[in-house]
Image (cartoon, rainbow over all chains, first blue to last red; front, side):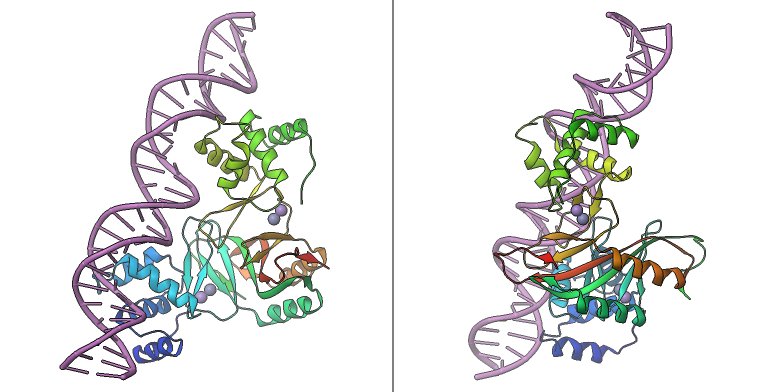
Length: 150
Length: 150
DNA sequence: TCCTAATTAGGAATAATTACTATTTAGTAA
DNA sequence: TTACTAAATAGTAATTATTCCTAATTAGGA
Ligand SMILES: [Mn+2]
Ligand SMILES: [Mn+2]
Ligand SMILES: [Zn+2]
Ligand SMILES: [Zn+2]
């Protein structure tokens, strides 16, 4: 999902999260918001580099860490070597496409409620559950068509 | 869960999976079976190295890949930089402990059935679901005590 | 405007993994 | 048993993703 949001709104979100709204942070956060495919750090770098050739990879990684720390973005595990990032921090699940390496969002309020209800009773001793995420692994059948939730 | 299995049974499992049962593969697979904490490649290396000083990291990684490919073991994503491995390939979920970096098994047949039933109706267009895994993230409260499912 | 801590650029260093290549081995067939 | 061959391995170099380092710059408050 592409999130349509103005430059100044991004600035405000960064400040509200307790960070200085530097040019680098705004650029990186704005770029990730436009990218709906859970990009790697490298992909984000390639996206912002043409217009911002002076932003270094050191800054990119540190900025991504900062944004994760204040919960403006999320770090997503992947099956390849590198992590991927997500501008959507609302509770949602991911579809991992094993043949295309796509990571797609799967939002399903009904399922969230089922799981919430289930784990309300099913206590795990000595563990405070912070969140529960579903990882749906599968194969995209027709590579010419997109995957879509009915 | 520690899987109690004899050396020759391991050998047979490797052959049944279509691989040559070499000393290296038997040692690596046997080691992982004894380790219930989803170890990293490095941890496995440290475990086998004293008794098998000639097994190289190249062989270890290639062997782990082979065992994953034939579905004798599973590669498990982690929040730190390295992957972790699991001798249990039966469908089960993982508890990720954010403060201790433990990865624990969470087996729950009742939950499996709920999810299976749910996704039987909820079709996702153009996707063949291969499996659905739950990632339970949480914090271990008392570091002196273990986490246990009630 | 001045000050200072925070941030950044640029690049070196590290960690995990993969790639490479010469040597060894397992399994098969003569 | 021996010979053969493809597969596997050891040892190590290379690569990839990420982190670390340090001097310079900057943001934002006094
Ligand atoms: Mn998303
Ligand atoms: Mn296990
Ligand atoms: Zn997402
Ligand atoms: Zn497991």
